[in-house]
Length: 404
Image 1: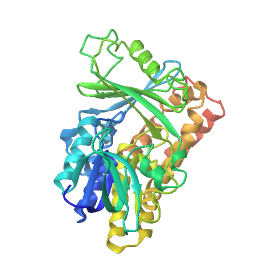
Image 2: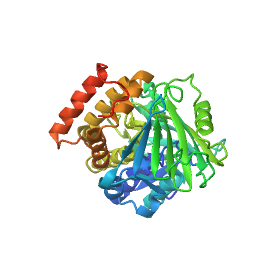
Image 3: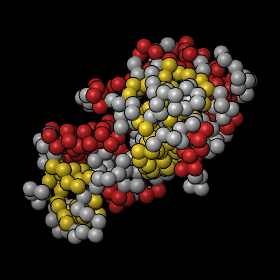
């Protein structure tokens, strides 16, 4: 390290932390990015094309472009949702993607430090002290910061030390296995795996309260599951999937697990000099579990709020990050939360949910909302049709096998 005090110390080098560090450096601040390394978050790796444009991400980081999603009901019924002409679902490998973001931050002037955050300490000086270890069992070291950005995941140590009730955040626990994609002819049923398709399993046997997935990553694929039920075997569910899909012979590249928050924290800052971003702020989309885009948006907003604080000395500037995020995405998060609470609660409801996905209006509006990251206000008649169909499903007036 080349100095004893930084404008900002960012704890955590995932998409939120790396983005926040880059934004702060570009705004002219001295930034230290602290990343412990050796850990990759379990993630399907899906990103919308809008992310590439909004954050200047090169197409070369995409390992695949999925042009269809397949929803599989408890009965085994599969409904394909083609993206159509409006775009694609970009797929990234978090191992490569996150490191590229960290290296871009370094090229913008951020100082990288491989280390594990320990705690925030305070003394009689004006600014807090960040303590850390460069290696397990190594000596405690410290650096001072005018502002601290916590982007250290769903069980954020920064948030727990700085924000009220942060330790009580509810989480889904996710686990996945990265495997080498099957070669043609390796599996008995060629329709079981498609390198251009994301498969989502809404089946209680694989997840009692969330979903399981098979997402293509080009030469590899992510097979995973999420659940908030601590007694449910995530590894067992993935093993069952691999067996049923004839993917047991595919080489396992790595295994990863981590908690994923279910809702945004009510506060992102301590009213003084600490702000959080990404999973540490709880911004993962309910129902879908999508986090990369929202993490980077949150990282940008938190960085801009921190920059304003650093320039003015007004700690109230830190509050603007959450206000901006919730203004843009809060309504979507609320709707997705309600959808998860209702539709994922039983296999009977999951069956009807997959049935709804067979509707062309639902598919079109779903993909438009995903690509644009906001609720689609066009085509009001389509929304009315979907509302009426949803009501029929809720009341059980339509059989689960209906097609219209």
